[in-house]
Image 1 (cartoon, helix red, strand yellow):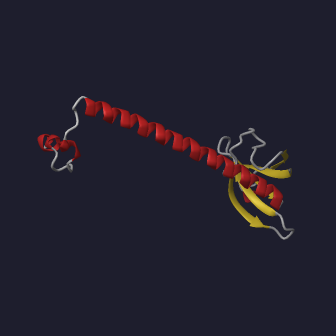
Image 2 (cartoon, helix red, strand yellow):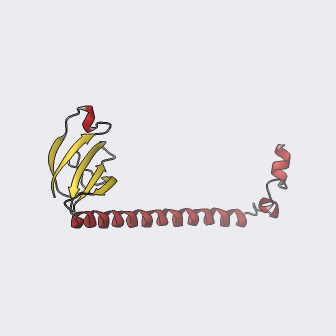
Image 3 (cartoon, one colour):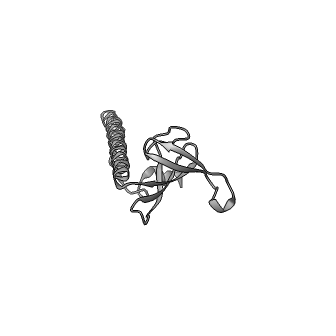
Length: 133
């Protein structure tokens, strides 16, 4: 990938904080802690055609400034898209499992005759709410 500059969170160039130049295998891997959850904070196009990116690792709070090629940014975006899709699939599975469990509970309550029409009345008409007032 090339060299990049690392700054701890809160440090700025004007604060006199030291920056470190390190090698980075890809934009998605933190060179400080090897986390695969590096997030892009900002970007701008440089005069030389590269993209200046500010990246942040949510695990160790390191901030990185790197000049990346379009190909490197495209590869990073593809990995982010794949991660987003994986999270969406996991979320969809959780929702389906939750709804399945709720349907099972409702089926059991119906089988035991624990659910009546009053359970579906508005909250103000429910006999349980009236008793609680």
